[in-house]
Image (tube, rainbow, N blue to C red; front, side, top):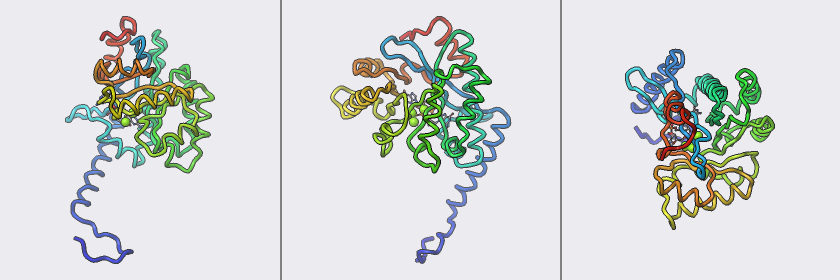
Length: 282
Ligand code: C2E
Ligand code: MG
Ligand code: MG
Ligand code: MG
């Protein structure tokens, strides 16, 4: 429908565009319903101390248990959630559910650190710190068992002062992780600027690790950089034993990936990783 248009004239709606918008609106309605009906769940993926092979943490990852489609992964619906008014509600649900689980495991004698992925909306409003304070008090969770994961775009794209928010969280002993490290544009700058505890090396660098490869060079340098800055380093996307041993020998502190375990429901996580000690049975 490309008519020679003047620069100020809006681009006319084409049929595919209209359809895309309708699909999106339908999805938004379905997601709102899903939240009301309790169709969201948090799965947990084990995070392993690479030297001892012990499970020391779990990343909470949202799933939508769709009545017909089964489990839907966040890549399919979080982009819609995050650009609608649903974002605040879903984020609040994720925080509440993850704190509750952390408290439950802690009381049962399993001090597992739980990683929570933050959404951009939680930085915009400025009440993330008070939300965390409320949750810590209500669930009586030791703050060092909560790790908030932030990506570069989350801290970047907002007018508020993210450094202040992060500092306040950190002064409460909440752990802060830089998620998907290496995939953004300014990672090094942000490492220097933001108060963090952990770097999570993105899985794109880890999945095809082989000695001598470019990815190996990037990973080695990132581990050394993290350690030089006093941070701990966790690698995502460890899919085989060779990657585990390779990363461990480079001094990488922790790891997660399909080799150690996929994200699973909390009950499965308990049965698999918390029932008889926390040793990984590889
Ligand atoms: P992320 O935080 O970087 O999470 C890691 C993703 O990598 C997860 O996908 C996980 O299932 C996957 N993964 C883990 N190990 C392996 C592996 O060995 N191989 C491969 N190929 N993949 C692996 P998932 O669960 O689909 O989540 C995707 C993204 O959705 C997350 O990326 C995060 O950005 C977002 N997300 C998930 N849950 C939440 C949530 O509760 N809140 C927010 N705001 N975002 C979430
Ligand atoms: Mg994450
Ligand atoms: Mg990640
Ligand atoms: Mg990611």
